[in-house]
Every structure is written in C-alpha cells, then in structure tokens.
Image 1: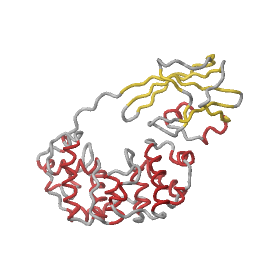
Image 2: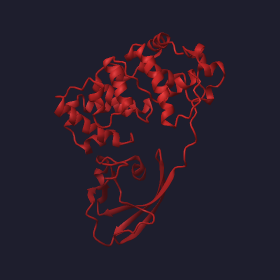
Image 3: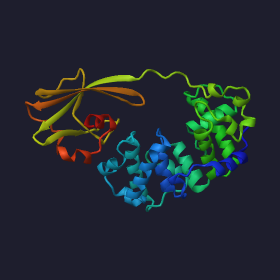
Image 4: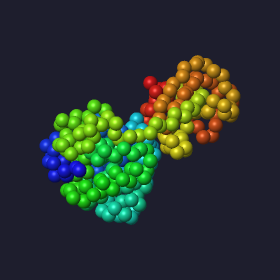
Length: 326
C-alpha cells in the first residue's frame, strides 16, 4: 500500500526545479505534458522555454501556422502531437474565448488529448482528483503491489489505473500526480532503482521480495519493420527541391524527395554523387536511406517545392533528413 502522505512530503522536499512547475497555468501544463510524451525531461526543457517565449498564450498559439510551429519544435519528434496541439488551440480560441476548459469532459474533446493528459491537467492545474497514469506510475504501482501481469496488455494497465485513481482520491491531486511521477523518474527507475531513498519502500512488495528488476513485466516487442528508401538531393543552380509530407508519420514536415526501394522513380535523372546510406530509428520502424545527389533530366514533380539552398534551415525538417544536411 502506498502511503500518500509520505509520498507528498517526499515530493515537496525533493522535487526538481522545472520551468513548467513555476505556476499552475493549465496552458503551460498542457504544453509540457504534450512535449513530455515519449521524450525525456532534460530534452523538453529548452524546447518548452523557447515555445512559451514564442507562444505565451493560447491565443498566440492559435494564430500561428503549421510551418512556423514546426520550426519551433523541429528535432523534438512525434510531430503529429503538435498538429493536434495547434488544432486544439484553435478550438479553445474559437469556442472557449482563449480560456482553457476546466472540466475533464471538455478537455478530452480537444484534439490530441487522451485520458492521461486530461488527468494531468485536471489534477495539476485544477487540483481535481483525476488520475494520470504514465510509465513511471505503472512502474511504481506494479512494484509496490507486486503486480506481475503483462503491461503491454490494456486490461492489465486498467488495474494500475484503478489503483492510481483510488490513491489520488485520498490525496492532494496537484501534489500527488507530480509526486508519483517524480518518484518513478528519480528513485523507482527502470534499472537499478534507488530503493533505500524511496519514502514508501517499507510497504513495497517488490523491495521486500527483492523483485525490483523483474517488475513491471512487459512481453517482448515485435521486431521493428525496416523500410529502404532512395533519397534524392536535387540541385538546380543555387536551389534544392523539398517535399512537404502529407503522411501520418511526420506529416507537415519537409523532406528531400524520397521513394521506397522497389517504387518506380517517376522522373529521369543522372547521379552526380553517391552520398552513402543513412539510418534513422523510430519507435516502431527503421528507415534506411540511400542518398544520392542528382541532376534532373526531366521536369520536376509538381508536389516539390524549389527553395534557395541558403534558406533550408527555415524549413522544419524531421531529424531523419536533418542528418543528411548535417
């Protein structure tokens, strides 16, 4: 059993000084939680500061365009979350007069906000008992209660979510949510947890049974799919050609023209230089990119954008293709 009071006291004494903890503005909390999805805190901090400086209010965010937004967060990855963020900001501007909604149901209706993010906003910004269950929370609760079930299976995660909700019901929500996440990040780490520094180790079943490194249990992931691409650096005097992605993955970002290995190339060209092969690993797949500098021998495709070479850094590009530039 987790002693909520002990956990909250520990948090107040040991919490990190993070920019998004400086106030309880729901807009700031929302931005930080979206950025923190699949991303380390240390990576997020400079992006968060830059973002809030550029867009200090929901209104200012709602009035930007996708390309400008992506130029602010390029390199952070998982760009679809920011497409949804812009869409949600426009909804708050038009339907809520720039006031972030204050009920769980209204927040869940915003683009890109699931139960975790809505719970984090409701508990941290509004001090309401809505649980937010992320990987850190799953780890703390699975170890404390000796839950051995496979956490890749959604029904098993629901058991954790139920316990987390019961705990926050007996807590100070704005402190508890951050406290249990902080415990998972700083003490109850995935590998080599600092159990002796844990304020609740006396009731942690995994600690008592010396099973910390066995929990939580996740079944083995499937091997990542590898996609092989031909990537073309197409130069025309002092210009280059780019394409704006419309696919779900990296949608809205710019890339050099690329085609899958067995796809027919819909133009004629001459290879000027072989630039080698680059690899980029995503969460669920791998891109292997054979890069060539070429000269067109036919007309460019209408979906391409011709830009000045010197301005390429003004176009938000995913890390996979920024590697090629660098």
